[in-house]
Image (spheres, rainbow, N blue to C red):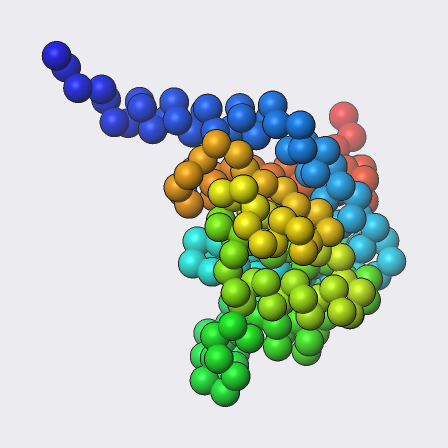
Amino acid sequence: MTPPDPVAASFEEAARTLEAFRQSPDGLPAVQRFVEAAAEAFGRGGKMLACGNGGSMCDAMHFVEEWTGRFRGDRAALPAVAFSDPSQLSCIANDFGYDEVFARQVEAVGREGDLLLAISTSGNSPNVLRAVEVARERGIVTVGLLGKGGGKLRERVDVPIVVPLATTSDRIQEVHIKVIHIAIEAVERRVFPENYAG
């Protein structure tokens, strides 16, 4: 018997994961709340903040560069910061411990009216949990991109977005980046409708 093609099987698994998210009762409504919160934050002069570990840090950086650079068309830069600078991370970890590497940066640059995108495939990353704790103390709206049931973060963020079905970080992150792109497009359509005319 011929073994299944691992490439085709992976694409099928990825498609099932995305479809499970699309069909989940909480998935798309949570993304809509994310869009509303981000548009409101920009509307009142706030900024986007983002944090995560490993691949989730890469997604946080990706989220931010789409605001400060270009997404679909030329427009004014929008304020956004990813907590990813290695000198800051290593300094804070050395002085205060790794659990504080994002919380200290929220404390330093976060203000009421901002939005923090907290990314964790497990929903249990201690340093992301601490960042959310500090953000909420400061009146910063928190959105969680999560997996594996959402973990502790599910109950601690204002808007939990949880990828169902997937049990591995790669499949969860594949949906996370789709949510990021779709949310950015939806916000841009509100803030810069001229980029989508015609």
